[in-house]
Image: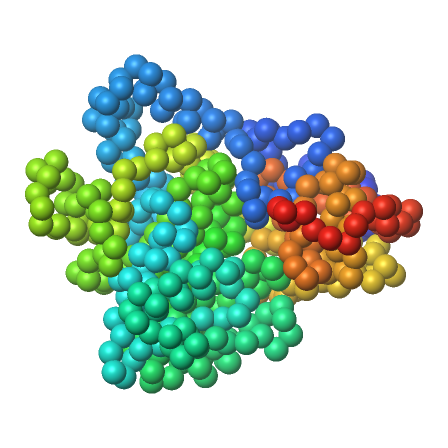
Length: 427
């Protein structure tokens, strides 16, 4: 049986007083009179992240090029130090991670590495609900090999437009599938796929499988190495709070280090020989071999402070609070907004949802705009979803109570009617 909630504002305040990780909220920059519910798109800046960024800026100012070897964390090894901090959050060995480039570039990299089509296996299995950039990259990789995406991309459809059925995915793992690439958490509905089951079933059929963890890393504990996941990619600017456009992460299971990267660059060279500047490429013997270019130090630096805070809080503690926050939010929606035509589009079971609530309404885009005017920062996703992400590091139970109360006010006063039923350029 789940926790018993109450509708009163005092109950929310009481839960905050009993929250063992409430103190971390004070380490973030929170705007007065604003409730930030968009941490699943861009996480807020923490004082810890700011501190590590300012340190690296100072190192650049004082050391110049010597920062690569003489900084507090020598910049040449910075990605590897971050990998040590990130490994516990996703259940990986530190040598299986490298912080590098963008998610889309890393998708290209892993597909180039693992997709080796032959006469028997020459198709990639994806789903219709994943974030489109993954599909763009995969179709590009097919075209580079002279393959027609209409014939060599197998797409699992959703029966309800919100979620995916793992059994349906497994049934599509046929003998002509060379590789499976899926989201860990769906970006619209927040559904959490059973990664362990899907990995096990793919491997029974000798198929490589990887995941886009952009909406799960930092929100949901993973056991990538234990489950045997072949590869994964994710951005770090959502739940992991590296900052806008900060570098992403690539995971390569140790058992595949001998394959070598499908896309190469000098920063993936064996570290000891990198500055020999030889023309013959020799990849590093770990995930570092998948790093293509020079680390983006100023955009990478905040991740050090952020990851240290994650390890201090504990990913299991963060997940526990995240589930309670979203559960509480759904309780309030069910009991205070039921008469206004809202639907909860995410799975309700703890083991099937990520870190946000997908609130659906036919006027979602207008309600979303009204919320912004009332000091709540959510986001809208086509066709009718308001995503509300109560990130456990900096969102309180009282914040959740206030958000639902403001939605009720918007509906009671019909405040959304003054907005066009059309999203902006950025939703």
